[in-house]
Length: 613
Picture 1: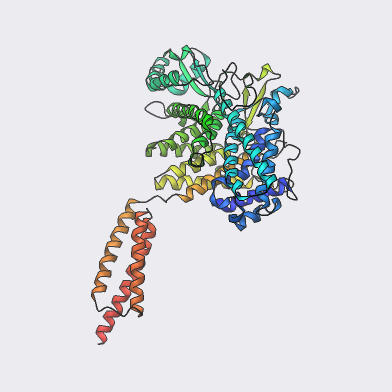
Picture 2: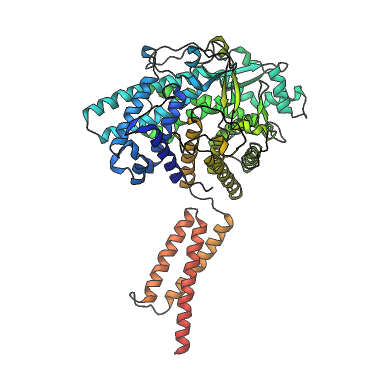
């Protein structure tokens, strides 16, 4: 299935408009207003494309494109849509706020009890989760950018007052989310002899190195990073002296929620109290990936250009950026540890909690992609990462056939369950299910495709992305309230007993992100081939020479057919040279070949005339 981000995003927007708008009014539905994660995901399906893709803008009714207005016609016309969004966002900020306690980040029905016979307590359902912190950062930045533009496009006093209140509430939520992300970051230090240490030795040694050799290589590889963490990480985390012991392993990243005993973060404009943490100080791969996705929006070009952060938020953003850089460097080095085969290539990845799954391999690959995007990736790194993505698609039965009873179906249906360590202090132990394997794989594949400067690798990635999208597109719900949205797992795996529950805003939002990433892919220049570039230069050289030769002959009248042809040839040659400078050698070749054909026609006509004379 070819990736057509504009058309496919319109399909998603039409489905969301049918589902969430009733005669122009927003309807949260049975499951809305409970989980701040799901509600933020639903709103981001609209706001993220609207603020990242110029053609999808909704903040200026005068430039809203007709097909955009048509896709969201159930939300009103070009004037009604932004006003309705202001109302919906105001509702969201009010629903997910605990009065004087400030913004709340409840996971609610995204949390599941480990024991089906025990109900989760109210306190557990209201516990903040890293997914919500991260999604709130992205949503708040999108909202602030949207409001900055829309405020100048309306003069209705009641709407201006609403915009002012929403900007204040959004800024408060953004600050609270940033503080929560700082207090959810953790550094876990453990000995070689511990269960976690032995698991890491097996992972990094791959049966070839002793525990002592693994520790020595680990010390060498992470010596500078250990020093940076010990000296620089202060806000929201207590690193402790144990990190200084180089005979111990360490790992860094995000826990599932606020870490137990995490110190409070001082922030001038922070509203409400900072709740006590409950999560054990253990990083989770999934939540680490989610956190990095949100944090990078804090220092995007759009955030900097529109000046969306106040002075206090900029200070918090710098602290988060340090953790962002440290974390991706750590996991990227761990994924590529050693001189031979990578630990990442040994699928499935095993965590320190003795859990293993293709999803964890994908999570580590996602962290590697973050690192490859932020620095100049080598061809070897990229090629090997492409191999991992292709193998994950096959093992996840996206590009290969699912047999009856195949455990790979659980990746997409029940998902990979994460026990949330520390949740048992508030009630029955909780877990978190990750069912978005396909959508995450598509997102990372497109990001790699954007990064690639190798034609062969990009072609492999594009073909893989199209196969994954084909798989995902078939999984849309075909009828009923959520028609056109996700997730209908039985559409691709008919014999699977599908899990019951609300439609998946998680997968729907991830697919939306993929389409935004695809639109950015198509906006960048195509990869230039050295061979085609050399051919283009040769063709242009020959064309220029033959044009000069033709112009040396008796000059035809400007209004004659020959004169018009020569003017067209000159214009095409100028464009062909410009296209070559813009790294579009193939198009340049095509124009040069056309020029050569027309010049040859002129020469043949002249030669024929000479012979007749």
